Image (cartoon, rainbow, N blue to C red; front, side):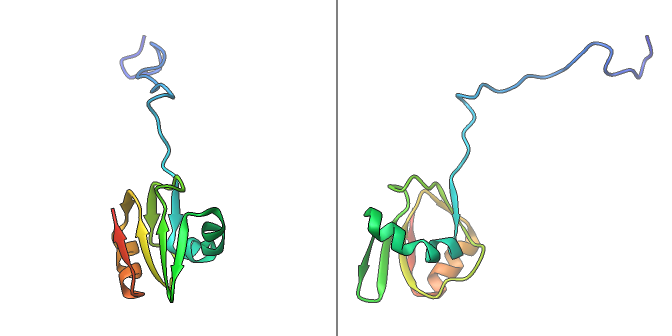
Length: 98
């Protein structure tokens, strides 16, 4: 047996049970803009004048990410949001409630 033969005794570590592992469901700011009509049709969003109100938590989306651009005012309710997403939503005239 060699001193540096690390694979001699087989695998090390463990695999986490699938019941513990949870993948977050995310959406980008640009996708939010594209899917706004779908969210309205499914009842997750409302339009009040020029401003939209979206509840992503009810739509089973866990996190809002900041990729892309948005030019509509949106009030978003979501569990988590990245710093870039907050900047872009607030710059467009909206807000994020976590």
